[in-house]
Length: 348
Image (cartoon, rainbow, N blue to C red; front, side):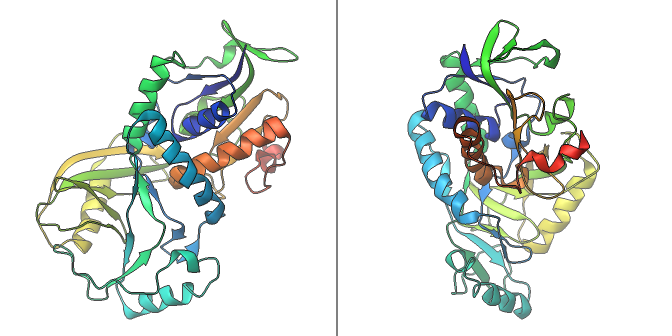
């Protein structure tokens, strides 16, 4: 019998698998690779909501876990995926500068907002009002992480590459059986695939489609992440990841002409140099209306649990939420009411 059967191998699934194994629990992951939001994510971690200069919920606690989690994974997989790199918020007016300095007076935001304007003039970007620097920022190469983690799982016979069959679950008093597998607990970490899950599809997971580019811009001299209406992330060799759009109607992973036009319009607002599109991709983020994750245990089946709704901040939220769910299952430590799926029980 294994301790945890985990459905999904995106950031949520990887985070819980690592948390469980750190505590010497046995795991097995099932995934059919149908969800791509983690693979195509920007991977940025940023403690500030730059659109309105406000704090990310429980940012300090998330960063404390993040700064332990990814270095441990890098050591385990012998790869480099965590890149500490400044995020600069380009200002479009004096008023935006003033709003930045007003936000930096907030005690919760002060550790994350530099009081010094960045006046560097980057070739390819017109910035008459300079930039504000976000501290403790960076990005995780989510594709490299997921590819390496999949290889690790396969080498250790910890991954079944198949579609999970919900009808094959059999419930016992002390465990569940799934086909030939006995497990003490099942963790559903399927991202937007939650809609096919008959046990948890009552939860209001909306899903927000995002589209991104990889562009080549030889004249763009940039060694930081610039964030405005889109982010521009340097990848090396004159390549940059640019994103992202937000579409609440389209729930497919297919790039669109509308998404392409929207991204091009936003890029032209920032860049004054030539570039070419190398790749265009899309995915559906697992977002929730109240912008809080979906964590907890099924109200009727105590061996079924969910780790979902990480939205646009999966890199930050995944490790933090995995620990919260693990402690809830193993130590009966109460979940924060803001993330506990009990807030939606009336929808069953």
